[in-house]
Length: 451
Ligand SMILES: NC(=O)c1ccc[n+]([C@@H]2O[C@H](COP(=O)([O-])OP(=O)(O)OC[C@H]3O[C@@H](n4cnc5c(N)ncnc54)[C@H](O)[C@@H]3O)[C@@H](O)[C@H]2O)c1
Image (cartoon, rainbow, N blue to C red; front, side, top):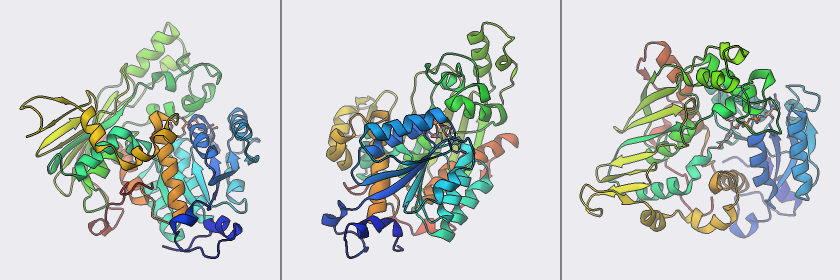
C-alpha cells in the first residue's frame, strides 16, 4: 500500500509515524471527509458520520438548498464544527470547489446515478479517497473510466453497498465459510422493492413519498432523477443490493468471476397504472409517458467456478419489500423470504427449519461486537457497518473491503443487462475488470471483528 496523506490528522495529533496502525494508536486517528449529495441517502450517511469521534465532516455539497440546509442543521445539532457548504447557487459543478478544499482525506458521493462516475473520477484525480453510493457508473465506458482513474491515482475506492452488512446476510456468509451448505451451486437475490411512491410524488419535500404523480423537475428526491431511468432504460437497474452478498459468498474477483450474463424483461405496466390510479384519470402528463423499464427484469449470471446467480429487479408493482436471497449448495440451502433453512443431516428430511437458531449460532463477530452501537442506524443497523468499514479501512490504510473491482463487476451488470435485452435477450461475455488478477486475489471482506 502507498503511504497516504489522508492520515495527516495523525500527524496533527503528534503521531511520529504514518506506517500501518498499531491498534493502540488507531483510535487517535481521524479522517476529514466531504460529502457530495445530502439528499435522503446522504443524510442517512451523514447521521452515521456525525456520531463518530474519528470523523470530521469538513465539507458538504448539494444543489438543493433545502437538502443542504437540512444537512448543515444535522451537523449543528450534533454539536460539530460547521462544515463548509457548496452548491447553494445551484451550480451542478460546485462539487469541484469542494474537491479543491484543502485538507480533505476522502469524499462520500450520494448523488443521482449519472453523477457517480464523473464525481468519483474527479475526486480520485484530486487525490481523495472515495466512498461511492451504489452504482459505480451508468454506461460500460463509465466503469472502465472509473477503473482507469483509480489505477492512475492509486486512491482507495469503496462501493457503499450496505446489504453486505445485513445481519442475516453476514450470518449466511459465516455459514458459507464454515461449509454448512457444502459446495455452492446456485444463488439468488434482487431488488424487489415497490418504488412507485418514490418515483412519483407531490413535489413537496415535506410530504410523504406516496402523495402524488409528479416526477422530473416537478418532483423531489428520487422522483427528480430515478424515474427518468425507468422511462429511458430497460435492464437490471439496481443490481448491487442483490449481487453484493452473492458475490461475497462465491468469491467473485477473488478466485472466481462472472463469465456470462443475460437478462429478460417483462412488459411494463405498473408505473403507468399507478399514475392513472393516483391521478384519477388519463389526462395528467405522467399518464402519457411510456415507460421502457420492464416491471420484472430477470438476470442470470454464470460464474467461472460453475455457480449460477439469478437476480430480479422488481420496483414497479405492488409488493412488500424483499431482496429474495437464496444460497444453495450440495448440502442445503437458505432463503431469506421465509427465513428458513434446510441442511442435510441436520434438518429433518425434506423439511424447512426456522433460521433463527442458525442466525444465533453463526452471528458474525462484527454484529456480536457492534450490535448495540449499530442499533438505530439506517436499514436495521447495516448503515452503521458500511460507514464503519470505510472509515476504519482509511484509518488503517487497509484495502477497502468492497473495492473498485467489486464495485465495477456488480455495477456493470446494469449496462450489460440493458445490452442483453436490447439484443433480444442475448447471452454476453462478462468483462474482467481485474485483467486476470481474480485468480490470485484472496477474499478479505469481513474476515475479522474490526471492520
Ligand atoms: N445504499 C442504500 O441503501 C441506498 C438507499 C437510498 C439511496 N441510495 C443511493 O444514494 C444515491 C442518492 O439517492 P437519494 O435517495 O439520496 O436521492 P435524493 O434525490 O434524495 O438525493 C440526491 C441529492 O443529490 C443532489 N444532487 C444532484 N445533483 C448534484 C450535483 N451535481 N452536485 C451536488 N448535489 C447534487 C440532489 O440535489 C439531491 O439532494 C443514489 O445513488 C441512490 O441509489 C442508496
